[in-house]
Every structure is written in structure tokens, then in C-alpha cells.
Image 1 (cartoon, protein in one colour):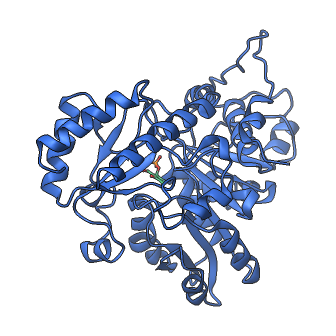
Image 2 (cartoon, rainbow, N blue to C red):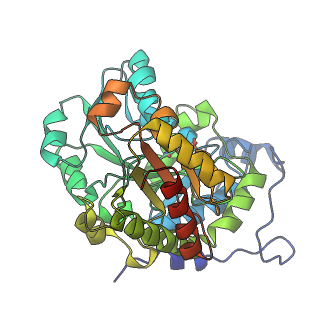
Length: 399
Ligand code: PLP
């Protein structure tokens, strides 16, 4: 039977304290106990249903975590203060000094910087590979490797990871496959394809209103318990806890994700086809020209489409900047990093979100100066948006 992630979210039933249709927000950092023994048991993790201190867990965070676990098909999940606040503890939990990670080379710049510049200080080394080539991934695995790391759809090049193939490798070599699914929520369900742990930056599509940062780790009960262990859990000890007020608001936004993703995908697909037909170098997983179009198709939950992200290459950074400024002036979107907003957002990743990647490496992975990354918005009239974008391109001599 097909996996239905949005149904899984919708089927959860929580009531607030007074019969409210939304769960009550736990507006407390600490909780009282009637007996000192129960407090001790809770600290030891042996008093189910009791709360001690909101860095450990809070009802609001657990509600959001459960909804996201249901969406991804994991036993449980833990929510964090940001996407990086999810990624960094996961990797630090899984790897000790002297161990090794094989990572896709096209990943979010912050994750790349963490693996390239930060974890080597702790004795954890990373080999960056072209994740679309399973033979290259396999060749990079050493006896010290613990983790295969990738994004389902990579930031910013929109490369697509063969999650089933990577999961097979992970099994063979006894590694954990960690997938950042930020670009393709609902469209791709990595756990169903064999991933061990799924991470999201909730900051993006899942929250969808660009009003907060947030993150989540979805995984087995055993792994999430390890992350939250008071003695040696990386999430617990590094302290990247989400605030309860925020988790309550993210949960409310999550409930409309399925509708938003369909509209993001519809609009992005419309623009990608038009841009390509006009001779622009366009990358979108929904285009048959995308090298991994069929792979994406074989993995996707069809209803949610190929996602809201696309890139075009307009030839130079100057042209890219001029186009983005003109599009913003005409209210076609905002010149801003991030993604998943109701309004289209665009940026030139080489000089912004991927600027942590050195220029020569950007070149090697095909991240060119003239690349513009679009997070396509929820425009009600995408035909009109397209006409106006086209006019900007013609005016600037790009087309
Ligand atoms: N993963 C991906 C794919 C991202 O694009 C980002 C941020 O842009 C992150 C993780 C980091 O998330 P956050 O900014 O919420 O820490």
C-alpha cells in the first residue's frame, strides 16, 4: 500500500486542556512533582508521561515531534531549535574521534562547513563525493566510516540521491544513512526507501511562513533516546532545544503542508517548463532533461510533485544580480536566502548560501556564478508571474 504521509499527520488527534481543538501550549521550563521519587525516576528516564525540564522534553515539542515522525514513518522524532541544531548533534552522536563520514559534496553550505572545518577539530574526517555515483560513494567507504550523509534533493544543485541504492550500501558496510529531506517534504519519504535517520530544517517548507528557524530528527526510539540522554546525548547536552511556543506554531503550519507542497510543485513545474522552452539552462527534477528525473519519479509520493525548487543559469553573477533586483522591484519575489515561503525567494547561491564552499570546489561541482536558486512561491496566477519574469529577462538581454 502506498505510504500516505499527509494522512498520517491528519490522523493524529490531540485536544487541548479545555477541549481545545489545538493541544495546549506548555508554557513552562520546569515541572512540579508530588513526590521526590517520581522526580528522580523521571530524571533517569523511567517515568513515562512525566516532564522534568523543557530542554529534555516538553508536551508541545513532543506533539510536533510525533507529527513529524508520523509524516516520515519513524517511531519517534526530536525537534530542535534549527536545522543545523538537528544536523550537528546527529553527526556528533554517530561519530567518535578517529571515525569517518562519506558525504555528498553538494549539500547546504552550513553543513558543508561543519564537516569540512569543524568536525576535523574533533578528529572526525569527511570525504565529499558525487552522491549520484554509487560506485564512487562505495569507493570512499573505509573501515572507519560510520555515516553516509546526503540531501534527498541537494542544495543548491538539485542533485537527487538514490536513497534505495545508498541504503543498500549502508547495510552492507554497517553504516547509518542520514538524509536531509528539507527540499522535498512529503514528496520523498526517505525512511520508506531505507534511510535510518531523516532530518529537516523546519525553517523552510514545513513551517512555510519564514517566521522562525527550527529543525527535527526523525529516527528509531533507540537513536532518539540516545540523542536525548542526559549523560551523553548530543541533542541534550548541546542544548539546541526548540521553544514550546514555536513548536506549537510550527505544528499548526505543518497541517497545511500537503496543500502548500502541491501548489509549490505546480508553480515550479510550470515555470521550469517555460524557462527551458525559452532556452534558459534550467534545472528542475520534474523536467525530463534532469539527469535524475526518473530516479525522483521512482521514489516520489506522486501527489506532491517534484517540489518548489528550481535553478536557472543566466551566465554571470552581474546578470543574476540585475535580474533578481528587477524581479524584486516588480514584486515577483524577494531577493532573500531560505525557501518554502508563500512568496518566491531567489538568491545566487555561489555568493550566499553556498559561499562556505571554496570557489574551485564550487566550479568542480558545477556551481556557476550565474546560477540563481528559486524557491517558487504559492502564486495564485503563475501564468502572470511567468509573463512578468520573462519581460524582466528580455529587458536585461538575458533572453
Ligand atoms: N539543510 C538544508 C538543505 C538547508 O537548506 C538548510 C538551510 O538553509 C539547513 C539544513 C539548515 O537549516 P537551519 O537554517 O534551519 O539551521
